[in-house]
Structures are given as C-alpha cells and as structure tokens.
Image (cartoon, rainbow, N blue to C red):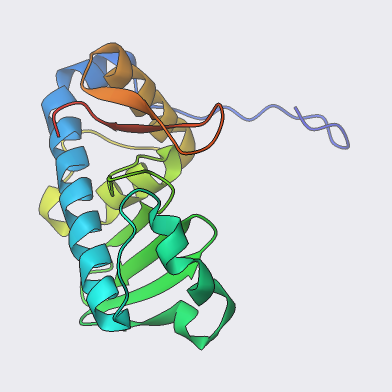
Length: 170
C-alpha cells in the first residue's frame, strides 16, 4: 500500500511447487553463475595486473571504484566495479552477471535480484522452463526454497552478522 495514494498492487510470483519441480535447473544456473563469475573476475585481475585477495576480493578492487579504471571492456564484456560488486554485461548476448566481492574464496554469492537477472539474460536458458515474473521477489522465493531444499547454503562473511548464499555443491 502506498501512503500518498492508497492502492494495492497484485503481482504473480513464482510458486513454491514450480521451484521444487525445477530445482535442478536453478541449481545448474547457480553453478553456471559461480563458474562465469570466477572466470570473469580472474580475467579482470589479469587485465588490471593485480594480485587477487581471495579471502576478501573487495580489497583487491576497492581502489578501482574511485578512478577511470572503474569501468572498462574485457573482451565482449563491459565491466563496472561498484559497491561490493563487479557487474559484467556481454555486448553480444546481453547476458548480465553481478559478482559479489565480499564473499571469501567464492564468486558465486547469490543476490535475489542479480540471480534472477542472470537467469533471464542467459541465452542458453531460453526459453526458460519456468517463468520468472519479478527479479527481486521471485529471486528471493527461489533462494529461500533452494535453501530449504539444501541446494543452497548460507556462509559467513568477513563481517559481523553477515552471510552470503552460495551453492551447497561447490
């Protein structure tokens, strides 16, 4: 409900049963996300000629957020180092992936919005076996259900009371 103009928005979201029925698909998407995320980060490390701090990758890229090296090209990918992520967009396919830089030894940290966006922009998944209606809300439902199914797990970060969601089978 909105306070200034009271109205209720109703949106269709992915159903728990649909997530359960497609859990192998979502697990494979997370594996692909992790693999591509690590591949792109390692290529970026090579391009920038820096040593990767695997325990806290954000430390490796933090200085790049403040100068002209923040945004650039890496083969067919455009990259943008920002916040606690490095975003990549493929200029040929339109595929988008946002790699978390605050997860130790892991480039497959799953954010609800970014995970859904990755799935929806990955050409090899088309046509999708199941509709994703809204990136954040459906992404949250997918991640929560996959946690309950034991396909994803929470891991502690290098910060107090913070965690990331990652594949269990990694």
